[in-house]
Amino acid sequence: MISLENGIIIDGQNDLVVFPIGDSLVLKFTFEEWIHFVSMVGDANLIFESNTTINNYECGSCGSINSTIEYEELDKEDFH
Image (tube, rainbow, N blue to C red; front, side, top):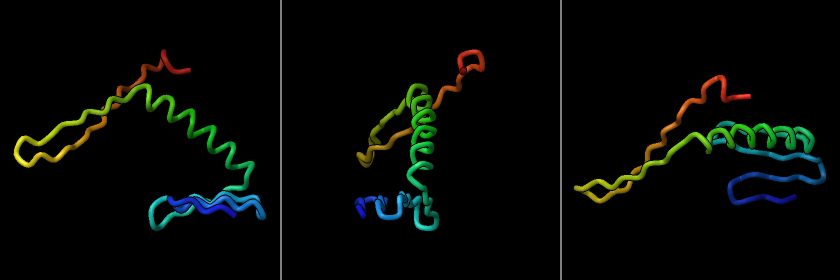
């Protein structure tokens, strides 16, 4: 069993991937389910990253750095 720093556990004995999301939700996948899940997330992430812009800005008063994420919606004609 491998336990990653972010709390994800890969359990080879039971063929499970345990994927915590926050403090109150834990997703458990069989290895087969995990492969399908990662494929879906990869597809969504490709679209997300291709259509987002991250803008960083610094507060002139306190010097803190903040970010905003802008997402540009795809036209239905552009999505297959």
